[in-house]
Image (cartoon, rainbow, N blue to C red; front, side, top):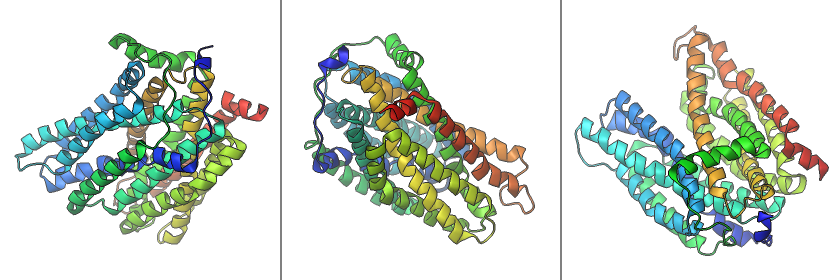
Length: 428
């Protein structure tokens, strides 16, 4: 068996888990600025047309999404350790992010080209760091409980980073945001020197052609039933989570009548996820990641059902919804990567193809985010809703924000109950 070439991992202390998890904090710090702040910053504050900004960012994100499997293949076929890939990509990430948010004085056309170049550098460097980082965690192996702790540690630091970026998510604070990222990145890279190193990879140095690098990851999806099931559940569940995120501003403004409370809603959501993460780690380690993920889906459904009954002025009740769905977010973040690490282990691919698996995983994640916008916004128009217009079909907005995600979450839960991951959990 190929997997026999990789020795079982010893259980890791919390200090070493923290040394590994710290890098997720600066990586997560970039997520809200890249997806929320950047369009408004370049269009409203730098004078680039919204059409140009949208076209540039769409092109960069599509290139980035479909480059992920190639990046994963390159990591797998390289003699370099995961840490070296991160150390090489991190300065490019820092440079691209800083230049993107602190551009020189240029005309609008030149600024659009500047955004195209710096965003492409930033996205690809971010993806390289993220894929190498996730593959590193999977390559460490260990029990299902240890994989839950690894993912939980990583995502707990990530939630801290998201909270930090939410506090700095204003155009006038971009310099502080960049400096905060630089400091956290340096600290995280130093911490990685104390993180556990995975065993040598069984196929280190085996190179793939570009054609093979494109085909090989998707072959894993098609030929590996465990991976195919998990990826499908992850995508369906991800759409249910991404739809409310896409429509939050509309829901807060035209259903609750409190658009100014959006920062409070977001902080409540992410703070709840951060606070409950240790609980999910314990639940996942005790009952298995599949059971914990299903419980998280159930909590999210309760939150969506509650949201469907809200109306003008129900700010306090919506904060409870934010807390409930934030609790569920902790399971969504920690359990799927732990299950994926188990799939890699069971397939005999630990130490061989972690980068390929996570490359495809990240591509699907990005396509789900794009698909949520592509599904949610046209749906509002079909249902007759017009933002800010009194008397428009607000009921359609409520359905798109809460009703449809509730149904999709239930479908994801049913798929999980029918999956090999659930059957394996029940047989343990």
